[in-house]
Image (cartoon, rainbow, N blue to C red; front, side, top):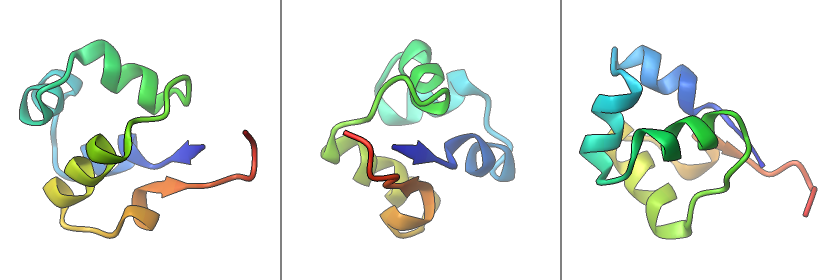
Length: 66
């Protein structure tokens, strides 16, 4: 799944560490999500979108790959 997490993080002027703390995850989790190496759980995806005040489709883009 593709995502625009890095874009939104930059728009809100947050470091990976700051975002991780706000979401209750590790910085490594944020890095992995941004690089597309890890798809967050649905619960975490909704936490992320609530934090930025956007719809889930605005950050996470399903590319049809399993």
